Image 1 (tube, rainbow, N blue to C red):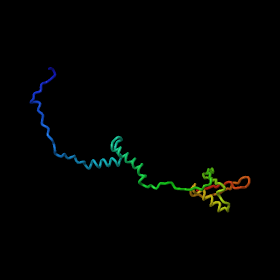
Image 2: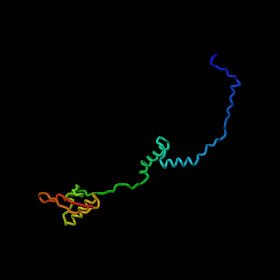
Image 3: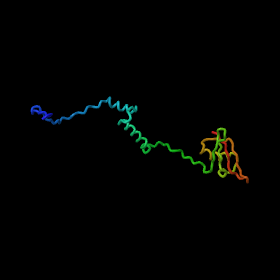
Image 4: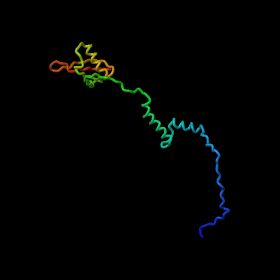
Length: 153
């Protein structure tokens, strides 16, 4: 028989298998490796595609999406109830704004009373301002249609 080699029985001796029942100690993780890993998380030095990178991204996403349920950031918008009247705002050409307020929102009165009422309507929209001047717009019959107020901050 060509290609087959006869193996002698004395060459075919195998060592008997031993059952190892001793406890093997795992190698202690060095403190240097632990600190290197923590430093890598803090300085974000792990490469994309590694398990450390994926863990960091997952923790960040969990914080972003779950923290509003547990942390009150007190970032609600300020509730301002602007006056229910119609107010139109447009630029006056010199860097300021003109507010046009419906006439029915203002009760007739003296100059100081009208300015106070106009401010009460305009300030919730624009914040703290002062009225430099105002005009009363009337229709053909003399009824007050609107008030134009020029304001500055």
